Amino acid sequence: MKILLIEDEARIFDFVQQGLQEAGFLVQLAQDGPSGLAAMLQGDADLVLLDGLLPGMDGFEVLRRARQQQVLTPVIVLSARADLPDRLRGFELGADDYLPKPFFTEELIARIRAVLARRHREEPEDWSSAGLTLNRVSRKAQWHATSVVLSQREFSLLGYLMRSPGHIFSRKQILQQVWDIDFDPQTNVVDVCIQRIRKKLSDSSSLPESFPIESIRGVGYRMRANQA
Ligand code: CA
Image 1: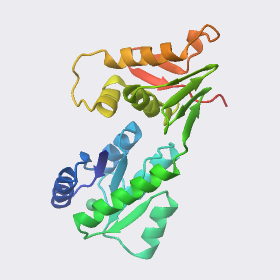
Image 2: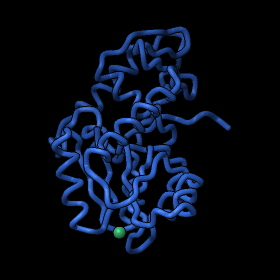
Image 3: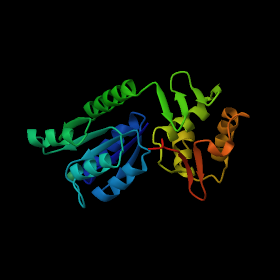
């Protein structure tokens, strides 16, 4: 599980980062509003911890812009401004929870787990886009007349792309998310895995070029969104 921490105070990000790492989370840090927003738009964190007061752009504005761009990642707002109007504003903008400073790491971690568990329960059992359906319980994928159970790796990769149709993910992001590889090992495992999924789901009745995972040359892959 990867947590994006958007926080500018070293004293706070140091202890939060340490606590989260000890609890087994991967932590990515952004120290101002614009770089925090950019990281949210990358879309590869499982949850975002967002400070309210940030240099460059405040946390509420970061949240508003991210939600406007269809970033659905759960967000917990951390803020010293714990009075009611601020809390309500956070929820109105799409925050999933709110934790006033100062807080204990234990409580933060408990809230992260609760938000992630709730999100998991609320997610539909089937992801579906551009004619392709993936069941997240059985790992069964269906396209046209072909239905097949994917391997865990194929499932993680396809699920990652399908949760954000239309969004282009780089090979590096995919390696990080699906293989947990944090560097560029000059490997083609991503391409090989995509080919395997495509092959498993294609039969004589389906045109290969209509398969909804698109290769974006020199960049990566994206799941085609439904036609409007
Ligand atoms: Ca701050």
